[in-house]
Image (cartoon, rainbow, N blue to C red; front, side):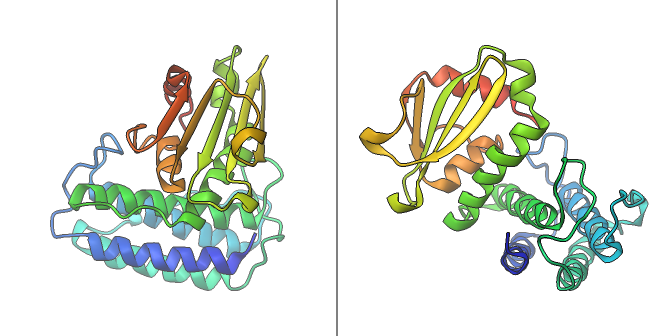
Length: 251
């Protein structure tokens, strides 16, 4: 994992988010049920400040949770979040992806958190843009990394599907905007409570699956995070399996 790359994502997505926000922060965010735009900004602001603390301390113990009351009034939230992102970027300048850092997800370190905060900001940027206009898709390279994180780190470790779906199934997710030499498919298999994922090529050489979903990496990522349905994807096979996994894969 490349800390500098995640820093660049944070800068770019933070700018897109700030540029999208209007005056009314009380607007509801349908993709984050129960939240307003202000709530999204508070969540992100607290997250980047907490992570900056973790990186500065280089601790293997969890940092003390931040008091939510440190978030300012709505009119100051955009500036506060921007300042928090700048503070986090400064902290990231002093770490390496391989540095040890506490994580609730076992065995992970600084690289895990740099990726996690970049992906969280990216998804929530899309959330806010979707309220205020037409949201920009996630950049292909970022979306591919987000899909990889979802399947190789979050699902196997946190396991909402594994815990609740012993029957399982096999799905093939094909990012059509990814070159074949980069292995544009994720073959996801859940059998007898055991989850596995493998990057594979597309076409006749791809493993047989119960369902094949094909589309742009951004649309696949947003599907996995419950932001979009399958309207932008081509589906062959058991679409019900996808809907079932969507309901169960909640973080």
